Length: 99
Image (cartoon, one colour):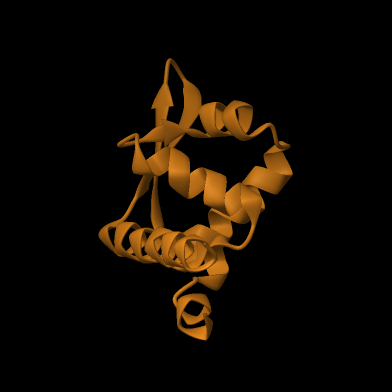
């Protein structure tokens, strides 16, 4: 079992970060407001978790203006996709080992 635990990535221990990565795994890009509604978190909470994932280079940020209003979109990087897939695989192995 220890082998599986070593493959879990610390960056995905938070339910919010896991939710962000799960949402981005099935969507090419998502806006800040969509992620906020989807995860039911505050602006500050979401921003801090997004910053942590950005620091790990797991997500990238694209800021623009739409009708003179700021628009921030997030997407998963190649590194983020690999790390997230490894994390999910480790979780699946851990669950299967418990049967």
